[in-house]
Length: 243
Image (cartoon, rainbow, N blue to C red):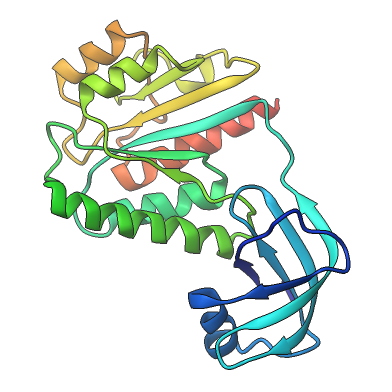
């Protein structure tokens, strides 16, 4: 059986140390997952470090485990960022969930001009809370030790400015001349992928990204949904990078 993973505070953990899981994570472990004394679990700090160990004590809303192994996520030469156009319904949460499972490092909400959903300050806060919660849960489900950063929304101008800070930015567009497989990936640095909303990327947005150094690419011979385009792009880039 796969060991359950929970998120908690780890301060320079060492073998033999006792770790307590409290708060929402502790209640979930005890009441929902029904973790019992003697089971082996994982606890990660969400920043790349985790511990494995046996549960030694279970309370009403917390548990204690003894560390038998300290684990670390291996450093990667490339950092993957996806700017996700705001979408209606639960499609954006689905995108966040699946990209987290694949190992995305950062997700940036993008209120594109053709986004049906509009985030005013109050709605933006609620949206960020949902996206971050989704990322945390997907991190645990996929047994990853690092929770991706879900940044504050960036407008088109801010996103164009960020392109200059990346090693490569791919703008996903169904009419692009180059396919993703035609692009030579950098050996290291940040690779950003920009995903439009349901209505697609507007011509003026595409022009702004291209002028800033973004590379328009197509992913397939069809038009993908906004909830799947970033996932497909991330998976393809990771495979190409490994090769």
